[in-house]
Amino acid sequence: MRGGSFRAGLALAVSISPAAAQFDVSDTPSVLSLPTTLRATVRVPVTTTPEGPADTLAALYPRLAACWRPPADLEAAAITARFALRRDGSLQGTPRITFTRVPSRRRDALVAETLASLARCTPARLTAGLGGAVAGRPIALRFVYPGPNQGDRP
Image (cartoon, rainbow, N blue to C red; front, side, top):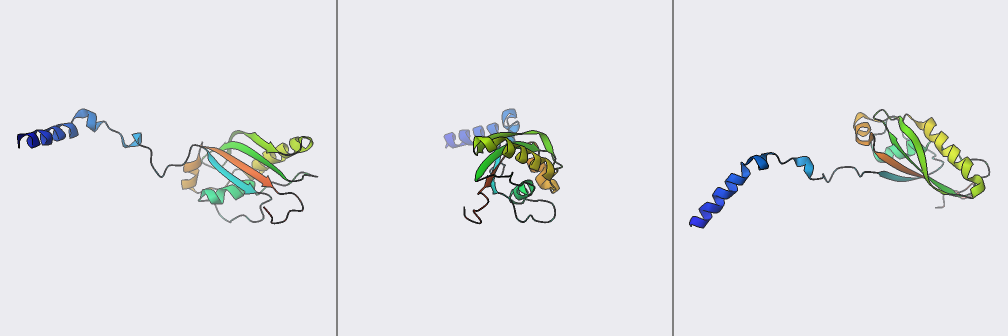
């Protein structure tokens, strides 16, 4: 019986010790936290964008791609831009192009259009909650253009 009392006393001592009091809940990652880099793929050109400020990531991505237009004579292509937004939806720094899938003669036009479209579509209208959640986080947004004659096919 004495061993049981000792274990209970030890457990009580550990629970009220200064080391236990210094434990911070933020040391364990939250299941609900956003990933370090927010990634999405958007088929462009976007035909409809929701009204009002974006309150989810699913509503944000089409808004950021809504201003994208295909450069002249562009066939099927894909490009990924990496950037960050401020709390108010404006661009933080200059976006970087991290990937392109396009013939080399059309690459410069595709890069220029993608960067210009991000400049035109920002600042994005965000709710305060979404603005706080995405502020400063890297976003890797992939624009996929199926080509002028592809219609709704993937």
